[in-house]
Length: 458
Image 1: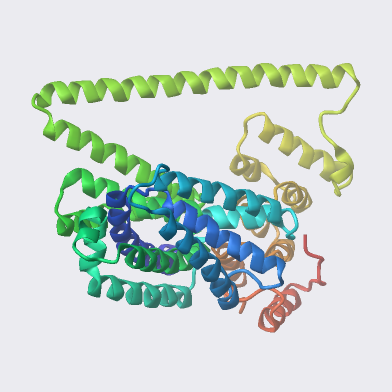
Image 2: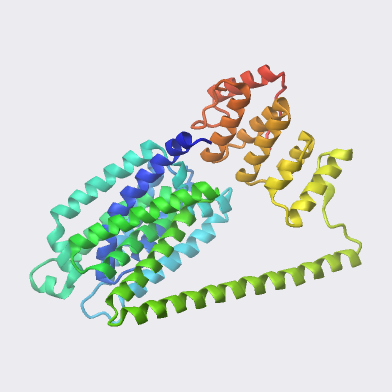
């Protein structure tokens, strides 16, 4: 995929991340001041639980009906959190929040067993699919955030008074319980609309990480907002770029970028505020070196143990007369089967898939590799190589891949490779499912151009 296509694909995700950083970092400052750090995680898990309940009731995920159902469940949680704050409570509110999160997570695990493709739903709920968002989703999030932002701006005085000192606010005549409920309810709106695209984990990081960095730097609210937005956007851009270049899932990589940013900001603040900066810099460097050495030792030790267990497994298999590979799932025959298995064995021995594909010379062997590599990143690489070796058979494999409705990034890569072979646009629209009439017509045109017959997907 060229830079222009990549930019066009990632621009909605970037805009959505900027909106989330702007809204969630502001709410994160309130959360830190109120010492209810895990309220976001709890509300996000409850919103996810609501979506799962709706799914089991027949309401598809990522629909307006699913959103409103999740919001209703989140509103119930807002009532619980509001009632859990009392002036003389023996149980900290954070304990109640943690219990609500654990209960919601346990219920979600129970319900996910009853849902079709449960593992996929769990992954979607936790990590989201922010790279594949559409402009319509960005517009919806912007509208909700704008309304909630305006509400918080107009009501900023009671919200800030309660966040700074709830007891003093109550003594001043502020109805703390009412404003707490409105805070949690508005918070629930933001979380519910965010979790569907970004997932539970990324939303939590957007809420806490920029606010933590900002609070470390300054005590003034305005400067906290500015620093939180600037550092959050920088970490987000870095994560998205790395995820694109390394072909990794965007949500976890962005979280990793925030982890790096938190460490760097903490180290810089520690050095700048230390009475002896030279000594603080030296100690920070030594600490970083110690952690790096510990990580290297753990990695090397783990690799050594893994190699030992691997040798023991092979010895056990040979002692019982077991073959190292199960050939029942392989559909190739004769020399093609042997070539494909040899390539896969080479990959298991340490050769990367890219090196395996570079040495491949037969499309039938690539079909076997395709069957053994369900990941979209691997499959699109196999499709691209197949198109280079045999355009007609590669086109058939490309259509087979697109029939699985892979993530948009990989679907676009396959379509770009197919268009390059055709020397004209194929007409395939990755924004629509493969079984959409327009895509079926475009696929029929590709088959006709190469003289292909329809091939079953899988």
